[in-house]
Length: 146
Image 1 (cartoon, helix red, strand yellow):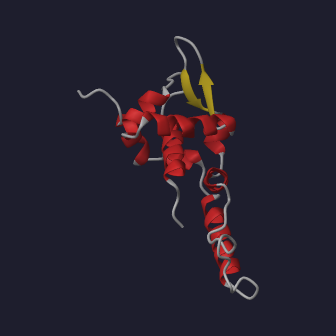
Image 2: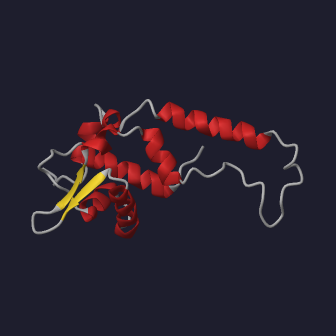
């Protein structure tokens, strides 16, 4: 299964926020710059993560983004499923419907494989993703040289 770029960006943002201290807030710009991605793309992912309750935003002079407690414990499979939209791996209907749709076993087999993919990711939390050696590398991203 291949994840969309949107889901990839959202997961990287969550991982980046998971390694900073609870008092250290990052902005969307800082996350986008540290991941070397366009700000507008990251802003869309951040907005969705806020809506899901994974990220909290504080406004004002000392504002920024932080990972919520629920976000730190969320199963990655559930997060990926939500971000990906839980769509089918293949589209059997459409402009030209598949002539096998009434007797095809492929769609079901792919759906079962997709469920197994999400299920295997549910054994991993966001906190697990940033364990060493990943965490120290994430902390170094965007840090001033020196």
